[in-house]
Image 1 (cartoon, one colour):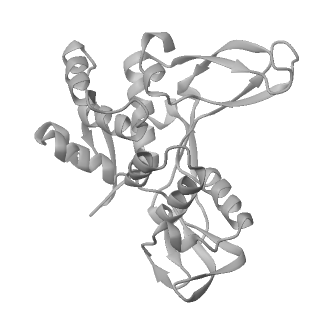
Image 2 (tube, rainbow, N blue to C red):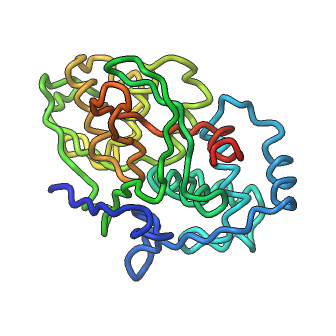
Length: 268
């Protein structure tokens, strides 16, 4: 078992989901969106009215459920709002973030203005990112996205000594559920992401674990897994590399998915 990730810039990838939905003939990666007009602006505003600004996962789900016309085999034009939300909730996290990025580029263009601080000299300066150059990480099959992790220190889970985990893509539902209860608790976030990305626990396939069942996992394994989940993940790589105009040293930053700035004229 080994990762087989395909990397392409957004402009070459086109409107194809990184993984998509398993269907009889392989995977359906279709993504189609509506024009974002005043009509859609009002519809989206009504749908977002009762969503708190801090609940980004719910915000993203709502935006896609309103502005997408088709995702995979699902024709959103023939579905009720709640049905569309359920489909988005069940999608892979990588596919949701990709759809969100694609929608942004198609509605407001490829350029995103950022305010960057150099990590070397502290210089603050405006930076314009080209979203069409964002690398999209995709796979041909779900099996190509799975990877093994050997525990640094085996841990007892349900009276079994676990030495190896098989990890893979996370469902969007994991992030939605975490967003509603995590707050600023990074420990709960890490536990939720690990359990949400777990495909096999030694010989047990598709295990469903509660966060507390990882209580005995050591810090080294927690950090290793957190890092590898990011490194081996699918979807858009929203990191940007360039050179500081003041000290000329290379810097790396992450594009802001922030709900307000990502879809407003200030970000053009």
